[in-house]
Image (cartoon, rainbow, N blue to C red; front, side, top):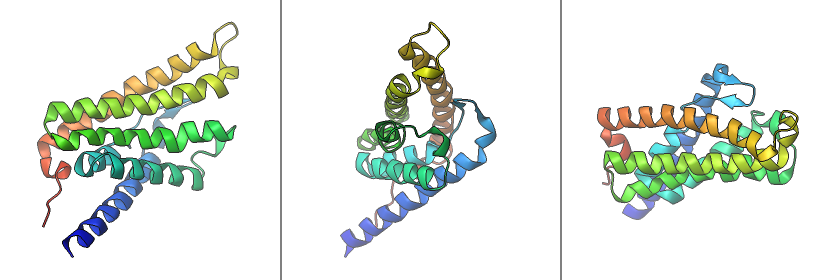
Length: 182
């Protein structure tokens, strides 16, 4: 019975934290400027991943990406099926790699794997930008460089924001990152 209850709790955490990421994404919409967006909406998925591991973190990211698509947040940015996969399910699922820190929940380890998860997300966005949004590059600028500038600067800003929030939450409420098994 304990295993069934734990699975149910994990499923509920996935649903709640994916919905929280979506809600935070709506709240910080004013921080989107053209192709740039500055957000701490990845933090709930990172908390989920550190609490429960890579698998639940990736599922939470997948659910968040599906919410992005069905609510229309992604509507203006979908130009090709492969780009859709790179920019939404794959990119959002890669945040779940932060769950590697679940094996050793020290501040340094959590921040390191958070950075890796965010980096992998923006690597996926980089490839989507390179192959599908190169037409937005200024004349004479290679598409890969344009995508690197746009996604690299967004990565740096969002990584800084998320690392600060995750670090503060780790100090203020470490229990957020550690499930209480009963």
